[in-house]
Image (tube, rainbow, N blue to C red):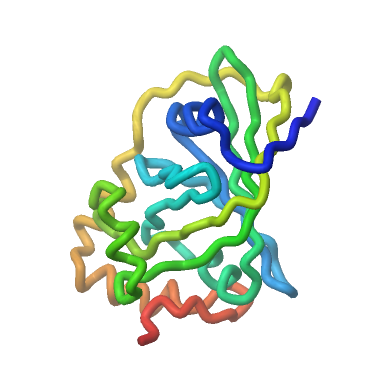
Length: 181
C-alpha cells in the first residue's frame, strides 16, 4: 500500500544511498514527457526537503529544458534487491550551471566526473513509498565506464562543442539555457 511522507525521513535517505540507479521525470507544458535513468555516484540528499544530482552530458538535455519552463519533477528509486520498495520524490526542480552563484554551494558535495554539465536541485514537496513487489530481483555488477570514457576522450573542448550541437534545445525545441550568460 502506498504511503506518503511530507519529507525524506532518515530511513528513506538510507534507502536512497543504497540505490545504484534512479529515474527522473519532467514535462513541459506542451510536448513530450521525459523519463531518464541515471547512475554513477551523482545523487545527494542535502537535507530532508532537498536533493540534488550532478547531471552529466548526455544525448539530450530534456530535464533542463523542461525545468526552465515548468519546475515540476519526480525522481524515482526502485529496489532490485531482496527487500522490495519503490520511492518517489515529488517537487520543484531547478538547474544550476557552473556560472551560477549556487554552484559553489552544491558542487563540493559531489566527486568530479568527466562530462559534468550542471546540477539539478529539487525542493521536495512530498515522498511516496509503494511495495515494489512486482519488480524483479537483479544483482548489481558494476558501474558502466562508457560515459566517463566518452567524456574523457572528447575532452573539455570536445564536450563544449557537443553541447553546442546536441544540448542547447530539447527534442521539442525548448531552450536548455546551458551556455547562456
